[in-house]
Image (tube, rainbow, N blue to C red; front, side):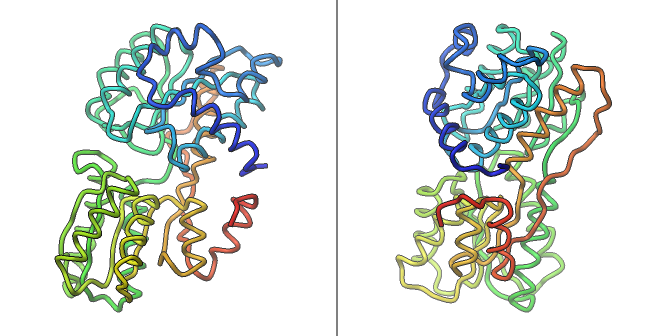
Length: 339
């Protein structure tokens, strides 16, 4: 049930309604059907509190965020509350996300659970929500300058990147030429994940950072960036990508070039990424627990609204997916994924 792909299909249907929604979310919430997830419609009819919990993701199409929303819906159904999804047009649409937070405040949302596109730009909107008495739960990406955060749900981005990158370097006996295909260079998640790599390289002087290029956490952009790198550099041993989507773009570029002997890693532990690891196309990925990020964020929001104890941090994921454990990982967490 945790990773039921039939439920995921329903989430994708809801996402189609929400994609690129810089419309007034207040209007959507008022209508009660467009912004709310399908699972939320069922839960709002139950014996729950009637809370409406806003789930703010970084886009409406990437598989990782669809699993986050599925997890949120699943827990909302258990608790008898309603989930309202807010998704900007793209990963870098921080202005759109900020506008959605402000709209949700006007709409009278009861709690906000947010994965910030830009951890700095979003702060004023979150402070406005807090001042309005709306609790804010941050998940996936920390917002260090927001002091009123109730809790953080997810894997520390620095730690996740450090661990999977060190695994890659050790697989190459602590030496080789490394390429970074990063996300949005100004994004907090990207800053933390790449900072882990540069810190780690201080311990491995025989690993050369050949170049770092932005792929904006997008498959096509990352593929194009990797194609350019392959044309510019004859010697590449390892590629670090900001997430599994970018990693698969890099893999496509490498496979298309006919080059061999280049190991690529991603971050997120998506079913596609884990399948690519199982098939030998991707070296490693690290699980971020997207389903649990959504579920635990909703749980924390409801607990807080009900006056119950909320921990400072809820850790999710953390498993490094390798060729040895990829099949078992998929069977446990994504049994219905079409491999």
